[in-house]
View 1 (spheres, rainbow, N blue to C red):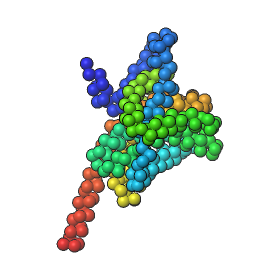
View 2: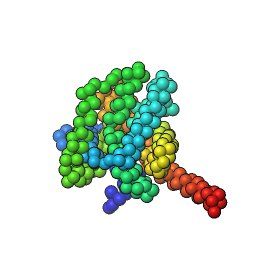
View 3: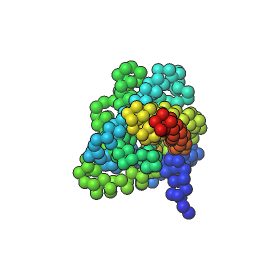
View 4: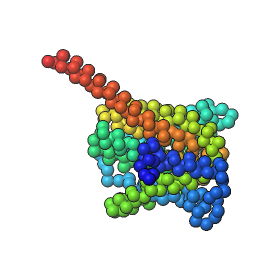
Length: 329
């Protein structure tokens, strides 16, 4: 029985399937795994510890030795992705209805989904359309893994008066420290980077299941369709922004568009935000499901959008080459 192969065929399957399975169990048999000891510790209460360990492993993959064009591309990808997600999230906060939702979406889900990119999908696209320095740019883009940049955006909005509650310095440090420790270990020892790289993928289904045990299936139904809308918006807005910025800098615009996705680990961001600031607890479950739906949607839609952009770019280049040849035979 090829369980992993089957899950790999589903976009974001290693995150989404355990999450929805656990949400189903929590809805129809909530006490099934709440029997204490190791079982409850692993399948119900482990999310925070496993997410922290995941962030440490992810931090170890950030290579500070990447320099030059690769560093510039990575910084550009990181900033554009964050800026677009933060601005749209701010608009959502401003125009949200009395229930705090914008088009059925929580602003928290919008920021979490749009500021966090799927590294595996980025590397796959860049492997086909980009160069080595485009691949190396991911070492900096990886900084958007986890809730840190979402917290930055929410703190700015809090200072502006659009969000209730702020994050303390200790909250920032507590979220960032695992990433920093991983970064230090990975840059001091390449073997540690390689060792910790193996942990990232393994942890995802386990913390996803634990997160799912905190979600009621009713929230899944409520969040499903709006989450698909969030995925479409993430591909179009962040992908197009990356495309245009890279084109303006004279870089391969397809690489810029490759950031237009939502990472599977972004599903954990709402819970992490709620843990750092209780004022977000009321929307955390709905935001989690919407981000999960966005993860699946972007994994399907982004490659299609990339193929469309690549064909459009190829036609334009062929047209320009023809004009240049006719002008200068």
